[in-house]
Amino acid sequence: MTYQTDLSTLLNRQKAFFHAGHTRTYAFRSQMLQRLQQAIIEEEQAITSALAEDFGKPAFETYATEMAILLAEIRFTRKHLKNWMAPRRVPSSFLNYPSKDFIYPEPYGVALIIGAWNYPFQLTLAPVIGAIAAGCCAILKPSELTPATSAVTAKLLRTYFPDDYLTVVEGGADTSQQLLHLPFDKIFFTGSVPVGKVVAQAAAQQLIPVTLELGGKSPCLVDETADLKVTARRIAWGKFINAGQTCVAPDYLLVHKSIEQPLLEELKTALTHFYGTSPKQSPDYARIVNDRHFQRLSQLLLGGTVFAGGETDADERYIAPTLLTNVSWQDAVMQEEIFGPLLPVLTYNTLSEAVQQVNAQPKPLALYFFSRDKKAQEQVLAQTSSGGACINETVSHLANPHLPFGGVGPSGQGNYHGKYSFDAFSHQKSVLKKPFWPDLPLRYPPYLKKLGWM
Ligand code: NAD
Image 1 (cartoon, rainbow, N blue to C red):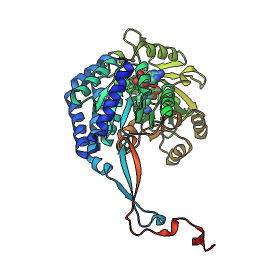
Image 2: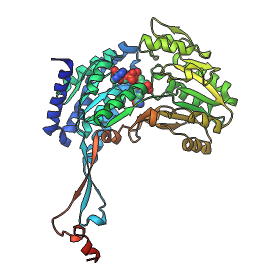
Image 3: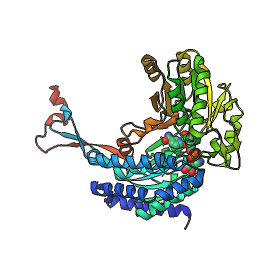
Image 4: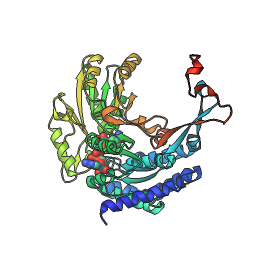
């Protein structure tokens, strides 16, 4: 049997499980969410070790950004699930009298979930919470770049769930391609913009509904009214957590010319507070995921003047938290998503000019603006487009399950978290119900008599 047939067989088994109706009830979904919660709690040590092995992820960051987020999401989903699953009555149209109209959320069926490596556990399992809640089965394909976490995820699902319902297929781009040719009912992809296009094309071939959680260059604007100490701390945290390998990390700073120097100084101070004078020794600072990304980032580093950081160590795949000045829009570091611990600092003279520069780039996944000026805050929100935004904060919008998380245009399609995850795996079915009586004859042919023409 070929690998392709194996995967087809697996998909067919999941389709049979789905069509047998096991996943339809609230009791089943709630129980499966509880089981996932239990699995994460029981396997905490193995998950933490896997992430440390893959890219030296600090234990605290693993707990806060991988496990705690998933556990909070499961709690929130279990609390609201019954309500989300219930058919919703909507007003009827006068023309359909006497009807009662509803929206029935129905599970798409069997979902394919393809994950990225940067938060390899959380990003693969967060969509699974939505899939379970919506009543779908799912096959997960974690990233091959974090093999220890991929193996732990596979083992965890195998231990706690039947593979006819939820399972992991490990492998790289080839495996992903094979899966993308199969007739799934939903595809949920997290990853880069170029691969997002490949996934969108494959989904289009079979008209499979698709959610794309992509990336891009998320700008961070700072005006002259901002509290620079707090701004520097919040930017440095959002940028250098996970060594900058975060889809919503501030990619570059665009700051008012008058505060460039004091902000740079505050950023330097914040970095010393966070990681000490030698971040390489800090237990709280991660490494670059592989040699290819280390080489890519080392090249980008040459694009500007190093204001702070700049040290690298290929053996450890270590790149210091680095602030870059004298960077222009034409430099390589401004041509691609950085996805690492390099923070270029560019300046502007007027806010309109900054907005124009942001709008000249593809729509980003996130946009951050630090300012005390409420009018300026609204101006930036109204005149730019991004998947999400924070005022006087970075990254944290993704931790509120009441907010949809996703991109716009080139940074993604669709969204998830909280109820939005349930919706991402559900079809909203329109249902109209009527009694047999009365049956008003007005709409039936022949029409002419009704108009009094014959
Ligand atoms: P990637 O696109 O290289 O890989 C993502 C997944 O796609 C992996 O599982 C990989 O095996 C698979 N893949 C790779 N090449 C493929 C191909 N040709 N055909 C089919 N599948 C293929 O992304 P990555 O390097 O793992 O992650 C980094 C990117 O993901 C960044 O751009 C980042 O911004 C983005 N990201 C977005 C979010 C979000 O929630 N929006 C979260 C994390 C990362």
